[in-house]
Length: 447
Ligand SMILES: Cc1ncc(COP(=O)(O)O)c(C=O)c1O
Picture 1 (spheres, helix red, strand yellow):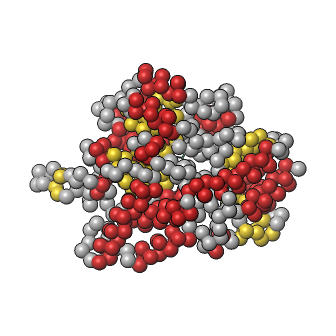
Picture 2 (cartoon, rainbow, N blue to C red; picture 1 turned 90 degrees about the vertical axis):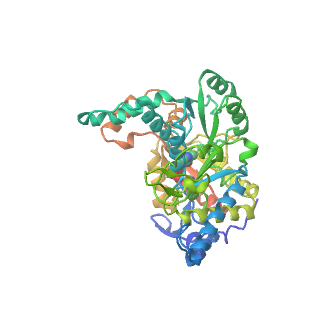
Picture 3 (tube, rainbow, N blue to C red; picture 1 turned 45 degrees about the vertical axis):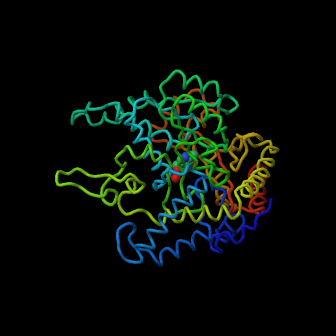
């Protein structure tokens, strides 16, 4: 599948030059798209146009305020359409997926029941639950001033009892029977799943898992941060109640993210953040009246540019066609995968069935950070090396049974003791030439 990528990004982005030791001045090859993506040219343009008419959103009576508010509000509809959210769903704007997960975890902390989080979840989709559930479980139990240091420990201990983990099996897949057992044996209120692993690209069977979650009356919360930019997302078809994603991962790096969820859920709660702009009136007794619409969850002056940039990116992806995007990116990743698979110096951590746009690997006998540094300094290729905020995945993939030494080292300040691997991740900004450059560089590094 070929897509004309050369007009999707600005000249400045496409031809960003870097100095290398081996190749002199070269065009930078960005294979770190699972971390963040460059802005699409159309997104940059939409932002420029919006800036011309930018005025106070939701507040002013002037033309700029009205235009800015209309465009901002319309962006919610575009986002809803792109992920086929239910008609009455709310789109709440957040800073990123981390913000979205902290928001939804906060609301759930008022409800009884436990939370189930997968073992391959990014820490952003796991720790907010531990924290909010921990704070809630501690209730009115407060620590003495001279025992302040124990606060975090208390919260973590209490939170971990409330947040259960379900795991992938030895094939790195979820077992529906295990999930059903968990749902049957515990009163689960919120079930959290990543739509695509940030470390391996594995995409679980969202629909089948969602059906089980609903069978046992829990809400289904999906982290689509690594998914929406590569695959078709259909919240209604997949039975997703809450969906989270970050604009910077889908070509809209302007500080926006979103959380989509049911109106009937959100309307029950005071907003996660509260202050000005998201309530109609405060009585003289201090009672604040509430909206029963999305505005109630839109405190302060919003990041309108973040919102409109996300809508603009989704419009661009709609124009290209997400199936085409998927086929194009997979085609590039597959070539790299095939090359690495046939290189005896490489340990590859994904298989054919799970391969999407991410290729995780190590070079035998060379530290992963050194390989990443060589790719950068010698060849002008950017990848990520590390543990990707998914320590369970790292332990499983690298078969680490005993972590005593790692803990000791990290506590002693040796952060490079944390195990990890290298991730080459593909997106629309990549070309055949990028693949060729990467393969050529890996040939040199492993020769
Ligand atoms: C699967 C997944 N979830 C959540 C996050 C957190 O996203 P953000 O840093 O945009 O909040 C990431 C970031 O890498 C991710 O890959």
